[in-house]
Image 1 (cartoon, rainbow, N blue to C red):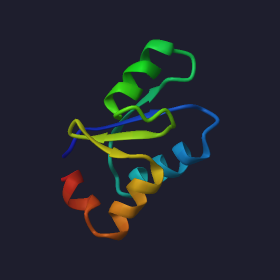
Image 2: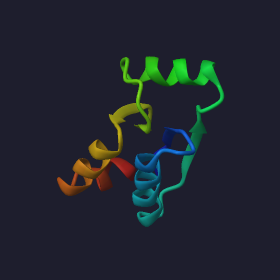
Image 3: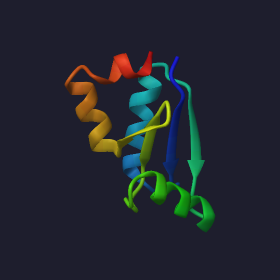
Image 4: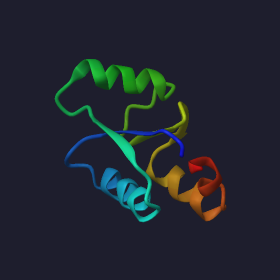
Length: 84
């Protein structure tokens, strides 16, 4: 199974949606809350190519984007193979 990391903040509805999709697919993921940790926020931004929004999602170390990107991958049938 793939290693999934998701950078989040507690008040973010897009984070909730992304996590719901991953849970629906029975995917274990590491949630990294950057709300109160500036160093983690900077790391997330650097890893995400400068994107400052949350969530930022990585599958096996590859940045796949945010919530909309995750749902788009799923709609295109590309997410499940990445999660295996």
